Image (cartoon, one colour):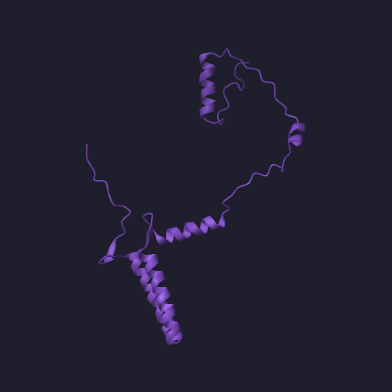
Length: 143
């Protein structure tokens, strides 16, 4: 029997530049682009404020991990949680007890034939296994 090695660290991102991964590099590349655009558009005071905020935000998204997962997963889960209601309330007034009581329940009368031979059991098993596509030889079992 041939043995195979099983990868151990499948959730470790590949490093491209020293300790920086591809995701972190792209985050800082986008941050540098935003900082450069703000340098060209705004005066120095506003550029410095925007630059520091963008750099801190990029550093947070690039390096911070919460429960071993990258920060952007935390932000996505937070947004998803805020969109969904946290409290589910059962609306007991939507269908009252009286309405349910007034509904008639009709049961079909079924005849159970407990005396099936082996051939009929095999045919019944085949009908069940084929999910009803095979109808049987004579169409009615046990009659």
